[in-house]
Image 1: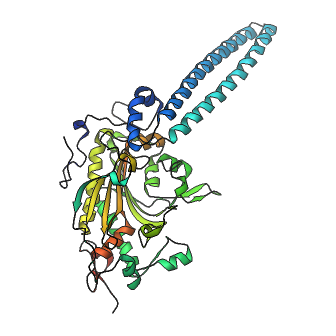
Image 2: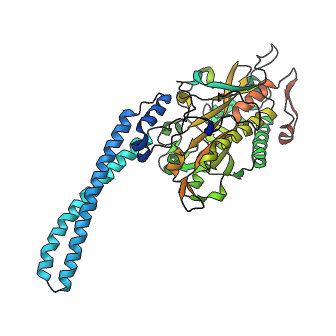
Image 3: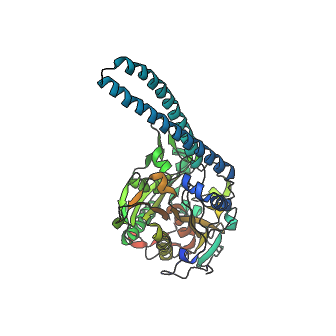
Length: 452
């Protein structure tokens, strides 16, 4: 079946896995590398990531580890046999003979200690190497290099330019005293704006609206911590991949969260869930903190790229066979939010080269900026398959008592800064900004008027 554009709610955006000849790839494990080395290397080439050298090194270290394990097992077996022999001699009153054999056990102890240290060193090498290899894209993902190679699969609304009397969002924000970028730069630095007056109420209204829609969608709401430990960052794949983009407090060994995905998904780190509890649906509002190192120029003007911003996130844990239906439902959820806000938007299926480190498949939502005449990303909805689950050690137990890895998914629903920018730019008229009908009850006002 050839994939086509989205047709609306209830139609599969991803076409069912059963219709596709390609197979999915889990997070890299030693067993998967042994069984499917060439397929995994080929899949990672879609990211333009050459994994051959790293994978072959991992397999060689694993071979050495297994040989070391065999030697350790043999050493421990011989040591245990001697211990039993010593015990028998002592019971028979043959103390002198037992003392002679004891000297042999000391050598075995030294040897077993050395073998354990070799084992640990090899396991550390393997673990560190695996942590730096990204998730293998699903077979349906195309092999592009960057955003230019992403595939647009749906568009709604008109991507029009501003009329001569209309203004970009940063001018509206200043004129109507909604957002103060200079005050934020004074108090903290660039990328940390103050929201004030109706700008603050618009933010709060959007957060309330997004959370209410998530609640209606069956997501349980959490208010999670805004800081995480390194184990949580590793569990969802931000560490070590995004370490340089996260705000780090070395004295406490804590990180400011880049997204609510991290604390929400880590609720189930080291947990075995019941099959009957799946799917598990979580949501949460948090501020998000990102260093955005290297960002500069027109792309960071106004609300385009901030170091602190608000976002509502939705997360699901799913059975593997249902996860792409789950992905469809999460895409539908975000689609409904943008439709209600009456914004022009489009949906992209990301190519391998533009996907995040942990994703197997991702859909991006972009809204149109009439002032900048370009699309701005406001949401990514991703299926990580078992990649995060292996890091989290999160499984579910089926009715037959067997344990299986869950699939994890998440999506922005939604990130606020660019939504605010799009609302200001796309809903303006000669006298101010008209708030969309669905949002107005959550803001407490229907318009933002220009000062006279």
